Length: 175
Image (tube, rainbow, N blue to C red; front, side, top):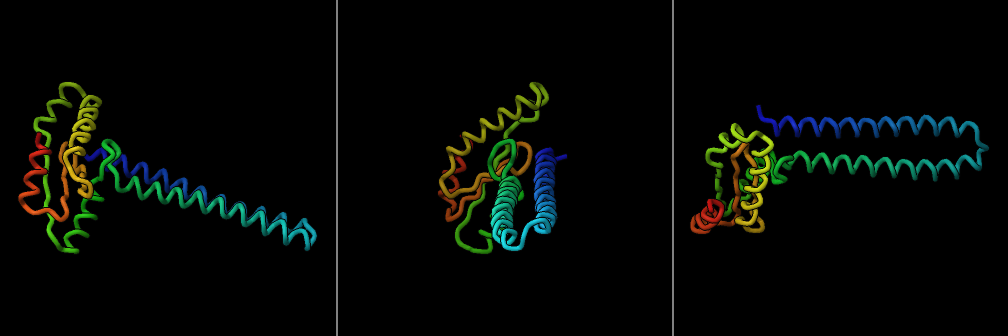
């Protein structure tokens, strides 16, 4: 079972709940606004209610936009390492292949990583993965995409890279 995928799903479900709550809040506000309109004289009602409604709706829209932005980020980032996740890797990879041009791919696997988790526990393994990713980040170039494919498997997409340059990046990553 891919724990990272479950974590992403759980986070997205939480954001979805927050978005539903915000929409429910908008509906509730609209109902309150209708009740308030009934109690005010016509001239006052028009000016005050329009301003109040406008301000509240703008605030709720900003909250929903924030939730949507957070959902997009969490849908593309591996929660453990902070680099791109598998979903985003495939999305970017597909786009780059369609665009054409030179492109290289380096696949990385942390050797004997299962032994670390078995011997020292997943907490220690997670800390090591984060350290490994920091080193990987320093080995790739700006514009390259580093992603966690699964567990201890990583991929670096190197756009605009010929074989010779890809081999140099791969050597840096291996070190």
